[in-house]
Image 1 (tube, rainbow over the protein chains, first blue to last red):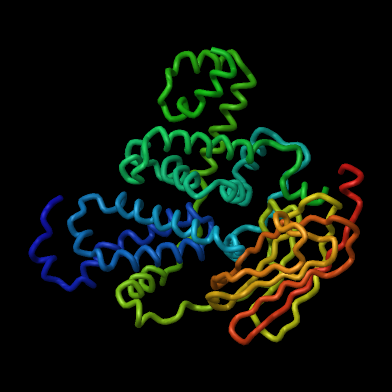
Image 2 (tube, chains in turn cyan, blue):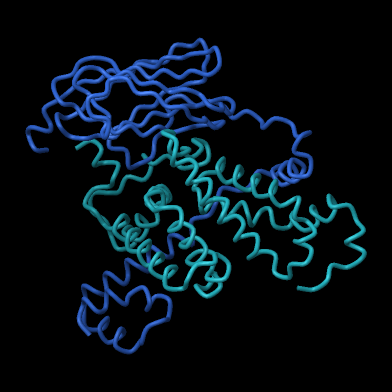
Length: 194
Length: 209
């Protein structure tokens, strides 16, 4: 870890914190949204992380690759918050009504071409709903590996979990997503009215 | 390589962690596995394309200033309460209730349950502000149970409600004919608000549909 420069050490923590974190807030928000699937939850998660990090400003000054370190802090905060919420009968926050598409717009046609097949797999609401069926650790590993592009070896260090555990978590999550996003004759929404 | 081996190694193949040649050969020979592979790729592509809604332009300023001065931070802006919002697509059965401890009467919604068949009823509670340690009480009509709470007609939890929309998932099962109301009572401090959900049974469970 490189020494913190005397110049930065002498500055007020507020300035250092803002310099360090402002360029990272959007990244944290994006990752938090991928974990939670909700704008309100993502904002809450990032806010909670920033609150925890301000007292650690000096420590952050010495970190060379801040982004993966922040992703790790965000991940742990997310998993903790999900566990806390699991103890309450109020199970989850619904996505903001004005932030997501209306699932009624996504009903598939009766017969579909290969292009429509791909489009339906990609329907935003279907994917968000499938992601909601994964547990917190599975969602996080899919978001960090398959979307953000961290390798399993990087995640092994970042999340402090054995490679084999991460790999089986990822594979299980992907299998589940493939099942949930499989080409059913009817959409999930249509099955509601069976 | 057979189809079973191919599918076992599919995720390693997607990550470039398996011996590619036998996988490619099997793909060339097997239409079913080509379909499975195509679907796996489509799911991964769709995940990558799923972009978050744009971050609110004031969020970074607000979040940083709250982190630096948590005590001086102003209250979070109130999200508007939403009545009858669209629920997630996977609902087996759903009912949306608007709440925020106001004097406004909540509309009575009707839910149909099949006999002896668990159904998840989802209720959305929209709160204009975070409510710490609110009490949620349920009074169930005769012949209706919450799965896992057999024989209990009165249930109560203490819970935190977050600002915005909170989802209560309630797995219900009808043990006999029902035509009555479920009462969900939310109490916070001196305020109480009661929501009524009309429960009816139908014979879908008996017909095997």
